[in-house]
Length: 341
Image (cartoon, rainbow, N blue to C red; front, side):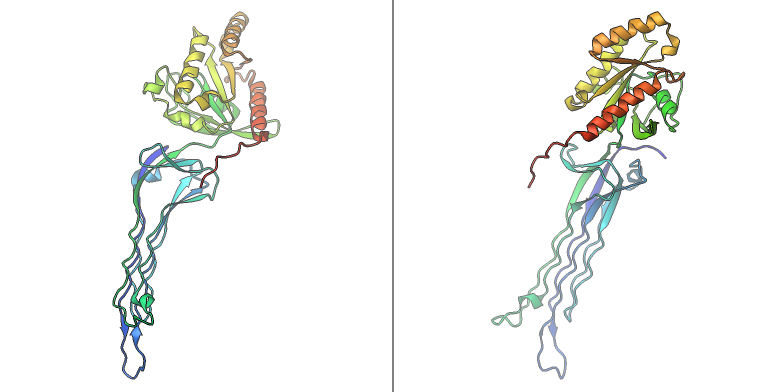
């Protein structure tokens, strides 16, 4: 299945049916009078987060979702049939944005969560509603309320506990394959990963979800390479694992490139807890390991792990550090959300 994380959708709710102007005229019936029924309500458009989906590919082939309008009212006080609702089933983690791609309408982060995108129009009143002591034969009825038409964007941000960052060929896919059952594409050329991958990682009897996104290069925030659109998939992570290729000539420069792109994308993402690891140490001797580790620690201002995704060296230690950060984030009290009317 092809991965798609951004889709433009056109929606329209159904209009309400018009009310009916009708009078009861039957032979041998002593009392007649107005008996026009109300129009039916138009169908609404909803969005619902469901399990089992991890892409928006369904919206590549269908972008228009129009709910049916309500039927008009009829005589004998018969109300028109209401239009059926339409439900857009989206993956968990989908953001719904307005047409400007900036205004957030809803963020569906839990299965079963629903949001009303376009309410159906109310049906119009029939002339029976206008009957009164002073107007016993009303000859008016209300038209139905029109539906709502709008354009929205669906943007998927994967739900993961930890995210992998690094330049192309830093060994992110190899690390994910070595620590989980995920089988991402691995090759000896840049940009092997073209879309995010998820894997469930187990350590000390506990599990967490890790996301691998395509590699960033210098200038990704300006559109170079694959750009930085995939960074949205690690915004929800509790911790980021920054892998630096130990075989690179200047590991400090590679480290600063990724940090610069994080800061250019979003300050909040740059402030997330990060764990730095020097990867591919199986290709380095002891002197090179010590030298590059010291340089990275000076640049990052923190501890640097030495790992090898291929040889499995140091993997357990870095996974325990990731699990500790995830546990710390889950235990932290949530900040009070701003009041909204």
